[in-house]
Image 1 (cartoon, rainbow, N blue to C red):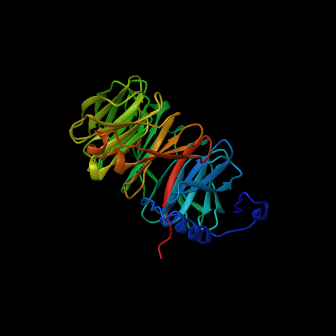
Image 2: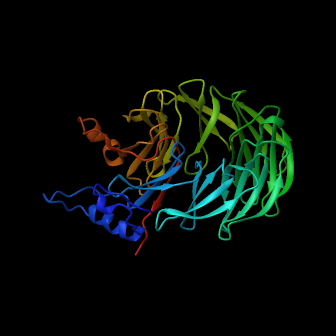
Length: 388
């Protein structure tokens, strides 16, 4: 991938990721002309899929700056990683593109018999892909870049989740939740839940399926082993996004309808509580070591941080624009908030925002910096630098 600098002399030069990494590590070493030492940064790349320009933007998190662009022949939708390889689903192109993370360019393509809707990874380096037009569940062997199995679905599916040997699929037009045996892609059963469902997740132990019925404003639950319909859990919002805490005992739900967040207890099969979480709660992420829930608020341009134990607002950070998805660096030191339209990334330093003593004594703004990535950001992925 050509990396273009300010000087025209650099135009068209080809650099490997290793060469770029050497420069990144030097810039992150903490040494400057004035001897000022910089704070610890996460040593990794941020890949952002941008639909507007059909590209993947690459930023380095050691210096919080965009360093490269990977042009694509089609708009990317979902990024995922498997064994050091980065992939992008491209619905309009009916394909999965493999990205060379050494040279920031396309390395290969997997043609699909339908438009990819959702992807889940298996331990054997294969991907289970939910496709549309026509509806199908696909097994994709990533190393050989081929479709190794296919199950035709009765209609367009809404969402997919996998837990061990079982997959759960929602089919909104049929008011159904399908259970599929993953090893052989055989239909294990169909449950009529009476309402159209979209988002679906397994309980952590794999014994219960939870599906969001947006129009009905409820979560429906199904026994994973038998397919028996269990119950309906009424919500104050139309469920669209789910996030679990570390032990899987709490599922946080956001959606339209109210400035509220619902907390579901999946093991008790009940809605435990509804709490305020800023204006128009949307994207979520859990910081396990501090037991905190981060929630973006596109309606106000804020990031609201909830104490999971007390259910109270721990802090609120104004990040501006229309924040959407949020990623936490694996070291837990930074929160990266993606803007839904511009693709700008707002960086929040954990050490500042989480220090209660500092927060009560007029601390510096916890919004550390903002850097651009890809407009119309669809998905983002953090990949650590090579070791050694």
